[in-house]
Image (cartoon, rainbow, N blue to C red; front, side, top):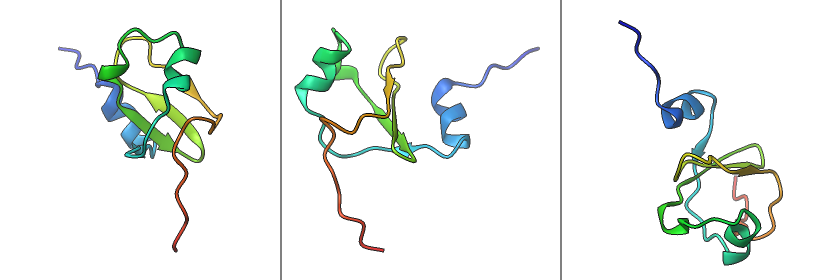
Length: 72
């Protein structure tokens, strides 16, 4: 029996973490997204990956993503 790993599990193992900031509508317009209400974004080293639908949109452009101050 072959077990396939879910995409979300795979990117988590690669070090992606759940992005919990606001995403501007312009991001969804850029991707021509019809189901932005399903969007679930993950982030790793400035790379954004959406896991909300089968399209799995991704970008390294931070425009439209809420920025946070690094308080480390």
